[in-house]
Length: 499
Picture (cartoon, rainbow, N blue to C red):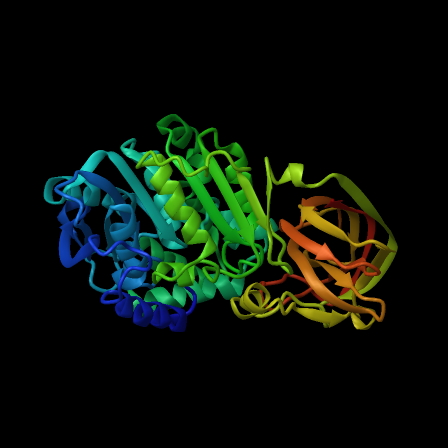
């Protein structure tokens, strides 16, 4: 899903240039033919897209890759990558606009049955009208297209491999983390749909309720739109799944993708690095060299083409610390940590209903700065008032925080509804902190509660002499908080996985 029309515009312009650019590294004899087609989707609704067919390789058949476009993005989104895949790997690739947006027909059903079935109907059309191999079918996508790909893998056993980038696997966990509405992300997605598409009945109802401060219907629909509820079917169908997300993703944060990945029992791979929603994959989508898309190419080459390129022999979980530039491989995210440190949260009381200077940053921008330029969201930790602040000891030799820091605490508030914002900082000797990770938590209907929840997954290299600090306040502009003027007391423990 897209929350930025500018991001969509940049993608479209770059992809348009890729239509006529030579495929990087392709042998002279190999190329690609590109045509614009109206493809019958579910119930005959036209899905309009670009069909990219390899040339110079004979008559085929060739592996087929289907790529549904992101939320608010047109079918040009993947044309650069598609041309490269066709010319260099010999794949037939179809990049099409998702149902309800731009030139495709129908209405937006928020990855509902019609949208998921569209993938199968595009496959049907490709098998009848292109030199596609029915035994070698893959689906790839970013954001909305990524989630559609996972749902399609549960719906259609012909799909043998999936590359799911900046994906959601659990829609409720993404947009309603710990009973807290992610208001900026959800609001932006709804706004983009009004501008770039034709909302269907479900989306119109979700939008109307959101404007009234309600999300009941969205939560009701979320399980049927989430691959996490269909993992048994995905496992049974057996498609090889590659998931790539960013640590700072403002729309689909990493924990829900990690939890889904851990439940997969198929050939699988997980890539996590610094950046925000879709920023880590954007350049690759338009055909430029990119770590994620390079891995995606190898994934399809191996699981569809049978190429012995070694991707199945390297550690399946690949992590790049958000403030570093080197990939490290592990058997799982949990296995990346070799120790657990604890910060004891001695009892502290602070004022609620007033925001502190601690914050999660600006969605998309802050994460992109972290991913591209290693510029973190920062704060002077001693100045974070009103808030609870707990400092851990310095690491004389540095350390890597990796995994899910976990907050366990007893909370006593003067109000029955309280939103807490937990921020973990890497703090230098003079007190300036770089945001490592954060998570909201809303307590509803009680003044006293025992809470136990993970902060968002992270890998972060802490420099020698720095220490960690937990800051907890009661508001953040990114989220719809419930805190009212009053006080809250917290006592507990923060557990920090590290190596």
